[in-house]
Length: 226
Ligand code: DC
Image (cartoon, rainbow, N blue to C red):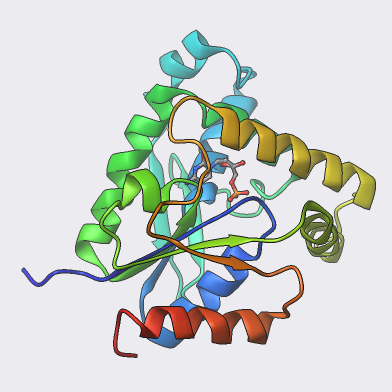
């Protein structure tokens, strides 16, 4: 079997990972894997059952009842299936963002999802984004990039995105949510958000999307012939 290529993109919420990774995957013809969406699906499932994301016993007990499916449509958009039901839109709320951050701290959840993510990367060339892709999921990724931006810029981008989807959010609340998730995601004991030693750091605070894409391609070109 030929070896697959993997591009790992990590960074905090709202750094632009999914927008950029999606565009790059389309251009390169790679599979785009949004790993945050998988954690969100777990959080949404437990939430429907009324299980607190902090309840370790409850999380462990009900995780077995969940079958997660990842499918791609003709446009390459990733769809999340929760026991066969498409929940791709339902998982995109601020409430589920917070719960996904809490639920992702449990070892039992991370273990199950680790295999799922590695399996996709074994079969396809991937651009995978998340928090621990370069450090834990794909430590031998072909290219590793750590995307970041100031909390204020990230909150502004996330607020605009959610408002465009018709959700009622304020900049202040989004900033608080982002700061809280930054803290939780980078302080958990297992697979915390951090830059891999061999990742290239890219701060997107002052860059627009085409500029970030250009810079990313330069970084990728150093490792792979595009
Ligand atoms: O990327 P996102 O905002 O959709 O992720 C939601 C939460 O899922 C995030 O706050 C932490 C968790 N997560 C994780 O722990 N590891 C990943 N690889 C991706 C997301």
